[in-house]
Image (cartoon, rainbow, N blue to C red):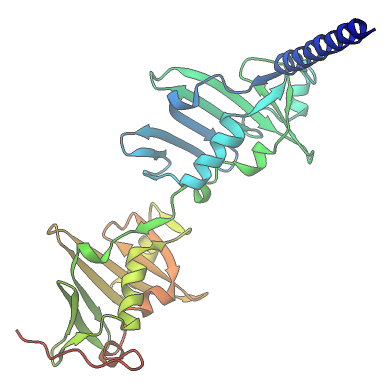
Length: 318
């Protein structure tokens, strides 16, 4: 009796192992990776949609947009794209292979979202069309194929070729330790903030004093230089905006420790609490919050402010 129970237990264990193996094999067989290219060996990606065409290239400096402008890629967008698109899987079940369905499903240029992937040897590995018609999931096909599959995500809606989402929002990342000085000119005054070791000195035509290291206006100005972002860019022919920069609201010149300079020029848009910023090259202008400009157009007395209970810094000696 005991031997019979042991035998039955062994049979059950074997059957369970077979079931698990077949289930795993069946799952592997029914699904496949949509993109054949190894994500670590991709050299270029092109995303085409009715709205725009975005080309990004893997360079020594990381992923960079090359078309329609040259700019750093939004890392959050790129990471999500690799997760949801490049590394996506789909059932091997063909939804339809009727040639007429390609048009009905909108899997043609001008209607679909197209994703083209090249490897690091500049070989085109994949060209995939995605679209849906208000469904919960996308349909897709490969270039040159009439077989239509289903993808359990909304690639065509989430990753349309909209430059605004693919472009890195970073404009400035200038830290305090690389600043020699900040020169500000606006309608009411011109002044200079000089960085001397761990001290900041205020200087204009009639005033010279040390700024307290916890002075809030100073910290706000340094913080915005440390992290200045935007999601609104104006590219190409910006001649319609240039008149506003003939008499700008404010200019900020950043003198850096390596001897280089950055000149930021601000013009008031007069609407929605935003200003335009020019950073040397007029081919690209940036819409930023007016608060950014207001951090620099300050009366000298703001820089004299002391935190509660603190004592004034010592007089400045030349």
